[in-house]
Length: 439
Image (cartoon, rainbow, N blue to C red; front, side, top):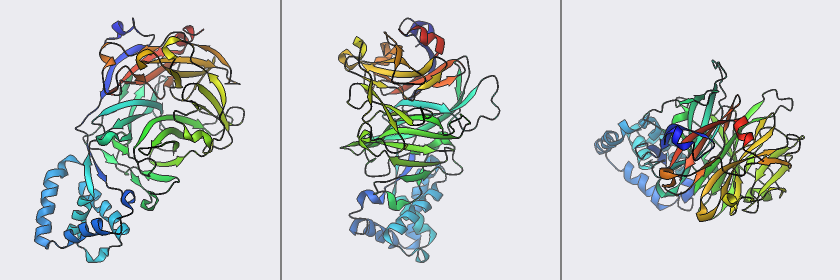
């Protein structure tokens, strides 16, 4: 879609870059023993290990050579990953590692892994935040981290990342990805059944753009959906004590729960449940700093309207909130929701929204909240900033445009957005242009 043509349909400038689902990007993914904990000490895993150990050394070496021939060129540090997976199996089954040679260990690890196309079905619903490393940036440019929801086999959603640089004129560049991707590793494999926080880390030699966070716990088993990242400043004076916090939906396959992703460096992460009544809902977005001395969040607590909530703890939200916005215009009559963390401007808090109208067509809008009292809606867009048109209407879920967060670069917003749950596009506008559309 060209920029000039799109201007007749949207208030944003549509950029040419597109990201698409890619079945060629694969990752070695383990079977988490915790997901079959009723048999972890029983017949199937133990029998599989016994069958491998029963292979004579020459047959084991021959079989392992076949595995390497098929998969070594498709993955990064393949043999090291097999060894790491073996150690998890050893711990889970109580094996005597001293009695097993390296070839059998690696072969066991291979049997407890599989190749997974993590973004074969869809790539969508991005959020974007300033990168922890801003060294060397000049002319108002901002290095960024963008998260995306990747959907693979079985409609399982995981979290992937892209890094890049954005400029004050709305232009941006994405850093390239390598041919290899790696799954982030859990620090303590005994916690996969726990209903508590779990920690994961990316490999020390893997870039963020080539790392994937897969579901770990039982509650997350159906997917990690729609991460809304924000760079949160813990310093009340605005001194830059930053932690990157994301809210996302953990889907078990039958139930949902809001959870937090927390990191200081995008190397080590904590995934933890949101406690309290508010955690039963989805689509929560955290303000980037405390408001009036408390944490502040926007959510859709009744499935239709937007609410504002406060809490004294980042991980505990027991407030049903106060009604912030109801659907007002036809393009949002079915429901409205937030599109990521509010963005602080001189005019107030800029809150990107989405609305659902007739035929369940999605559109992006915006509201302006009072800086000191964000329960006050100062203005909102009467018409959408962006809707799905022409070829962008078709995809995995048609007629959808959706974002989980935008980036302020000077006085310009860079807005990555999902296109019909199949691809990701990019748009930009100045803050002044958006404010002029509000009433």
